[in-house]
Amino acid sequence: MSTPVRIWDLPTRLFHWALAICIVLGIVFVKIGGNAIQWHAYCGYTALALILFRVIWGFVGSQHARFANFVPSPARLIAFLRGQADGGLGHNPLGALSVIALLTVVLIQALTGLFADDDIFFQGPLAKYVSNDTVALLTSIHRFNQYLIFALVGLHIAAILYYYFIKRENLVGPMVTGDKLTDTTPKVEETVDSSRQRMLALAIFLLIILGLYFLIA
Ligand code: HEM
Ligand code: HEM
Image (cartoon, rainbow, N blue to C red; front, side, top):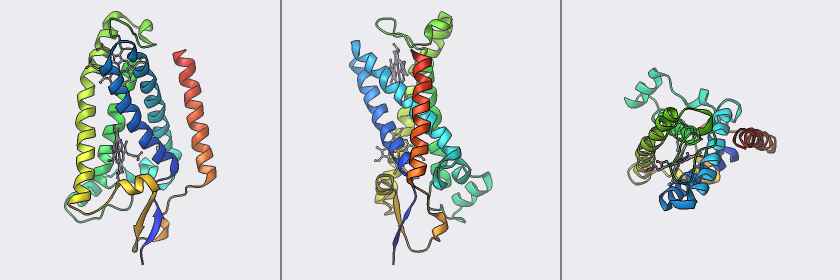
C-alpha cells in the first residue's frame, strides 16, 4: 500500500511558490515600465530575501532541503546518468544541479539590481555607493542575466512536463502538499516539518527582512 511521506517542508514550499510569483511579477512590472519600476524593485527585494533564506535553509532546514543531502558528488551524478542509481525521494542529482543554477542566477539578478540604473526614473539603492562605471557594468549584467533566468526557468518547466507526460510522475503535487506517495522507501527519508521548524524558518526570514531593510533604507 502506498503511504504519503513528507518530502518538502512548508518553508521550502512557500519559498518556492513565493519566488516564482516574485519573478513573474517583477518581470511584468519592469516590462510595463514607467513608475512600475518601483514595484519591480519591491519584487526584487522580496526575491533577494527569499533566496538568502533558502541558502540558510539549505544548511539548517529539514532533510530534503539541505544542500548536503541533495547536491550530488560527481560519482553519484554519473551513476544516476548511467541509470545505475535511483534519484531518491528529494531532488534527483540532475534536478539538484538545476536548483543550484536557478538559485545562483536569481541571486545574481537580485544583487546586481541593487546597483542598477534605468537612466530615467529609478536607481537601485546601492548605486550611489559605487562609481558610474560600476553601475553601468552591473546594469548590463542585470540586463543580460535575465536571459539566463528565462532559459533556466524554461528548462525547469520543460523538465517538470517531461516527468509528467513521459515518466508519468507528478512532481508539482508534492511541491504543493509536501508529500510523495511511496511504498518502498523507509520512513527514515521523511522530512521533519514540525511547528518548531516552521517557527525557526519564520525567525530566519524576519531577520533577513530586517537586515535588508537597514541596508536598503
Ligand atoms: C520563475 C519561476 C520558477 C523558479 C525561479 C523556480 C525555482 C525553483 C527552485 C529554486 C526549486 C528548488 C526548490 C528547493 O529545494 O528550494 C524548484 C523546484 C521545483 N519547482 Fe520550480 N521554479 C519556478 C517555477 C515553477 C513552476 C511554474 C512550477 C510548476 C509548474 C515549478 C515546479 C517545481 C517543482 C515540482 C519542483 C521540485 C522538483 C523536484 O521534485 O526535484 N516551478 N523550483
Ligand atoms: C530577482 C529579482 C529581479 C529580476 C528577475 C529582475 C529582472 C529584470 C529585468 C528582466 C529587467 C529588464 C532588463 C531590460 O531588458 O532592459 C530589469 C531591469 C531593471 N531592474 Fe531588475 N530584476 C530583479 C531585481 C531588481 C532589484 C532588486 C532592483 C533594484 C532595487 C532592480 C532594478 C532594476 C532596474 C533599475 C532596471 C532597469 C535597468 C535598465 O534600464 O536597463 N531589479 N530587471
